[in-house]
Length: 445
Image 1: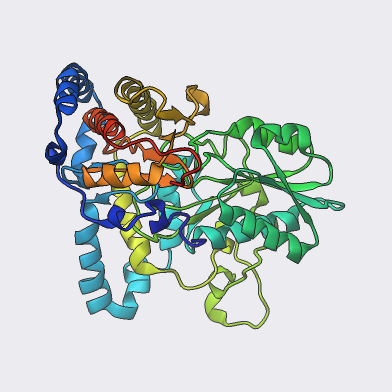
Image 2: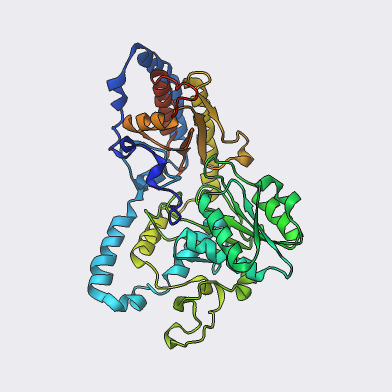
């Protein structure tokens, strides 16, 4: 779990891993109430079609391999970009099969971590030379936290950790604290400005809460940390590729993130590390591998770090996954992150509106904030019996996931999610909630 941030446990039931039914599969469950709801849905469905017709990003959907399933789990694993299979076939057959070792230079394998980092940089508001791609999110978290502590001022005794963080972040922070002699103090992100002190080395914060979809105030939290002399380390797993981040503009010190969610890099695709340019010469990685050495082929016994973001590397990069990510990022050609954010908010607004209209009163409660400034690109709904509800949704061709004990999660990837998808998902959710009995309190589920 620590290596991928999301696991098959997301669906919690064996049925959840079966093949989702195609569009229209819910007809097998048709009842008079279902037919009535379908008639009532005709007008919202027409509105969805109009919104899709006016969507400036609608054509980007064709850059992905999709089917009739409504896929709302891109916040766990993005869909396959059409550019990837041919690229990987060429890497295997020609670059590896024919050129072999020559590809480290002739095919640009050696410089791929920095080159692909520069490709991600505009989506995060970073200039070239500030992001390196490689290793897992967990490994990059470890580099960032320990490296941040080593840059902190003398007399620091604590690391602040987002109390709602994804568990791996907390595990890594506690391990780093044990190694460096500091303590970990969990803090609500909204209270970091009040809780940070001159003894704080850094705070590790999630930009978007993985469970609720809540967006935290990166500019204000970063500024508050800096005012106390502390560093800001951000986990961008649930925001990169979904909304503007502004790493350079807001003075973020260090950041990490995965690439298999909204960046669509594929299962287990390599993560990335961002180090603010003014800190790079001070960044002392706790994992000084030969790839980050100033002279990697000198094979010196003494370590001397390379200049710039290269010192964030460790060992030999995973070329197949790295180049699959490289090809996946081509779908962003001609797309601005501002347009993505605008569509994300419109999609989630529309979905929330439709859920309110279709769901039986009291069966679900949004836990994702209504305010745009506090919302990421997912909608989380509190729902009794969430595991059973999600399993049935998947059987009917609407794929989301859930988090125990009672949260349904629907991730909206604006590059390929349509308003028709959002309308259908809300409508099928309403059907499922009407057909499944509400669990009795205290009876499990």
